[in-house]
Every structure is written in structure tokens, then in C-alpha cells.
Amino acid sequence: QVQLVESGGGLVQAGGSLRLSCTASGRTFTFINVMGWFRQAPGKDREFVAAISWRGPSTRYADSVKGRFTISRDNAKNTVFLQMNSLKPEDTAVYYCAADLHGIIRSHVNEYDYWGQGTQVTVSS
Image 1 (cartoon, helix red, strand yellow):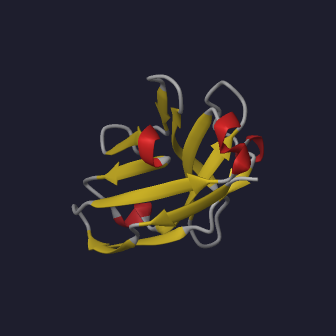
Image 2 (cartoon, one colour):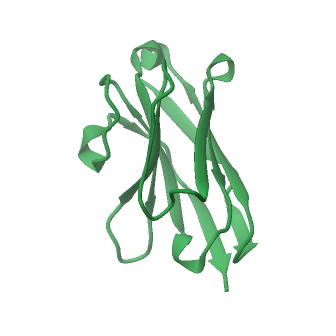
């Protein structure tokens, strides 16, 4: 099992920034190859935001966040970050951290094996 705990959400004005963190633990964490961030707004499906390879330089972003969000990791701390700049009201959602056992970066919800509880991000206009 892998446990994922997110933090860093909150309320911010449009144009502001937030940094989300996700710390992983558990016996099977050593088998994780990809860490990702997804988000779910009220009444909408959960959608892919960004992902990063745990053992290499690869990253992937949704078109809606390219150039504004940056995903990074600290392997020593088993932590992945999502730096969110130039936030917009449409970025308002619950943000979830996810872990994938497979070796390639994928963007579909059902392809990830473990999930955190989520952290609320609210961007006011």
C-alpha cells in the first residue's frame, strides 16, 4: 500500500500563487514510477493536471496549465510539488495527488493506482 497526503491548498486571488505538496509513504512506494496531480471541480469529472516520472526527468502537463504550473519532486523526502502561478478562477477545484506503478506517464484517472484525500484550492476573481 501507498499513502499519499496532500497539503498547501487554500484561498487565493486571481493572479496569485499556491504550492501544493504531496508526501508518500508505505511499503510499496518503492515500486511507484509516476506521481501525478489531478483536480475535480464541482459538478465536473476529475481531470489530469500534471505528472512527473519518479526516476527520470519526464513531465507532462494539461494544456490548460502549461506555462503556469510546474511539477517537481524531492526523492529524498518522497514528496512531489505542484507550483501554481497566475491562478485563475477556473482553477478552483479539489486537487488530488496520485501514484502510478507503471513506467510511463499517463493522464487517465483510472490508470493511477493510489490516491490522496485531496486539498481544496479556491481562486477568487
